[in-house]
Image (cartoon, rainbow, N blue to C red; front, top):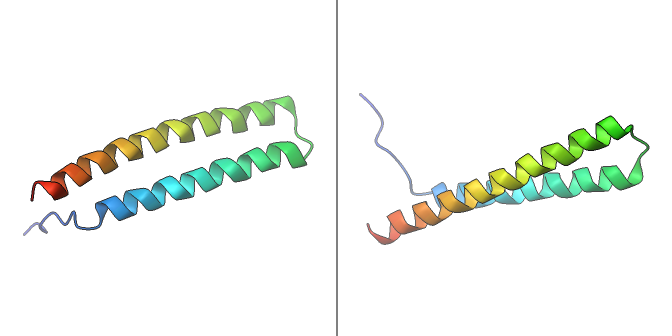
Length: 73
């Protein structure tokens, strides 16, 4: 038998994911400033941070959906 869909903590879980991703972006930016890296390594970090920013936007969209779901229950 399948478990029922428990969405009770989705907003909080997604908000934590946003915070963790923002923290990772900040740490990556600090590493760009504080260490000697090749230009290729710097480019990889910048590209990864761009993907992280896209993920944050997706998380925020999901948060909006989950809050709407909560408000309609």
